Structures are given as C-alpha cells and as structure tokens.
Image (cartoon, rainbow, N blue to C red; front, side, top):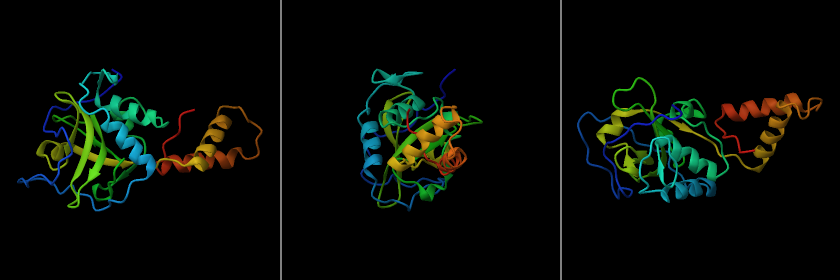
Length: 212
C-alpha cells in the first residue's frame, strides 16, 4: 500500500469556539507556544480548510476524496513543499517537538485503534487561548474535518508532534543548488561540500525541501 491512515472518531465540522470539557484520564496535550502564524503558514492552513467536507477516499489526493496523508501532501504540494506519501514516512521527516511547543502548521502523528506504529496524520490549524490544540485531517468516517486533542480518542492516540520550518528564498536557493550538485550537475563546484553541509543542516532542523 502507498498510504496509511485510520480514524473514525470524534471531530468538529468547524473549529471549536472554546476548549472541550475536561474528561478523566486525559493527558495534558495543550500548547503554550502560540504565536502569530507567518504568511506561509496562514496559506497552508487556509488551503487545508478549503478542503473541509471533502469525503474520505483511501489513497485519495484530490477534491474527490482524501486519505489523511493524501490531504497533507496535497496541501503542502500546493505550497511548493515535498513530503513523503505515507503518514508513516512523513513521521520520519522534520523535527520532533514537545506538544507544548506546537504551533499552527505543525503536523501531529497518531497510532489509532491500537496500532503499533504511526498510521494517521493531521495539520495543526489552531491553538486556543487556553492552549487547546485543533487540527485538520481526513477521517475515515467523516472526511476532512477539524478535531481537538482534548477529544479522548485523539488524546490517547497521539504519538508525537513535528515541526517543519518553511524555508525562505535564501534557503530555497541553497537547497536547489545543493540538490543539483548532489545529482552531479556541478561535480567540480568548489562550494559543493559547503552547500551539501548546509542542505543536511537545514533538513536536520526540520526544513521542508521545496519542489524542484
């Protein structure tokens, strides 16, 4: 299979206006790192929200239907960023962060229904004044929706969060040039080692490689 998703639990058709009621045994999965999103992050969130209501389709990557990882790669692709196809592989990219550090635009990874590994992913779209984290994702039962980490199901299923720094023009130029060098286009370029070093550092720090 070229995809991995699984979810059919509580969700909101719109972002909750206030934190969900407290429930016994919930982990404290709130964020205290909210800041005004950049224009790039705002665009990613808007593009994701434009797909709210789209039905679930296993392997789907279009308005006709999405699975969870298909929604993520489509939204990021529309903003010129490459991500792996499967949620399991997306979880290996970027930089893991504590949930308290989560900001809009970050990715949340889940292991649902007792799975032993990541099988679901969502895009953080909001942090409330009380720290409640909401995210957009493709649910198997309700399609593209907004859910909360205060929901018992998602609270239990969360594995970790990841941040991806969206690169600016300087980093894009370096990454593209380094990519060409690593492909043998500039095998004698004196800056080869330096550029490849910068490329690896950017990836380690969670930067997303721009589409070529």
